[in-house]
Amino acid sequence: MKTSIIEKNNFFEASIYKVELISELLRSKSSRFLAEIERWLSENQQALKQFGLVESSRMSILQNQLFVAKTNDVPQKRRHVLMVGANCLESAHSVLTGLHEPIKTKLTNGRETIQQILMMVKENPAYQQSPQENFNQYVKNTWKRLRQDSQFTAVAMQLQTLLPEVDIYRIIAEEIEL
Image (cartoon, rainbow, N blue to C red; front, side):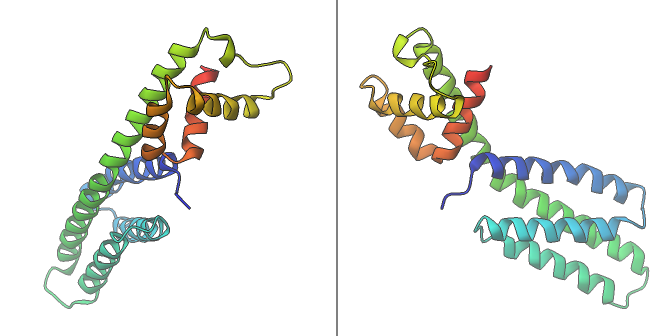
């Protein structure tokens, strides 16, 4: 089963946003910094594992680096742990942005293509909602008609390789409602 690209995109945006919040804890040398970065790395590791991405192991390695830094007996331990935490935060951020960019690009391209197609068929009577169709059925029928319409067959195939069908339905529904 293909995971929704929209859900992946939402996860990456939320997780990357948290980097700024965790960085602020580091800047202020808050005692909450370590707990927050450990929790954040763990959340990322679990989500990436759920998405089937091998980068989940990278998050696990970063968690381990933090653990080792906390258990090492070194002079200026707090400073050392904060530095290791900062490096882990930077590495994790880099991994997440690297994974997010292609997903964001696919989603943007898919959304723009769907918007263009819907603008082209907006006035076409074949694509109007019939009184007996509920909205969900209308969305599904619109996608079915687009795939069968000789004018849009190639573009529909392209969309199917770009996005899972659940995301195509969702974007069509969002764009029709607008």
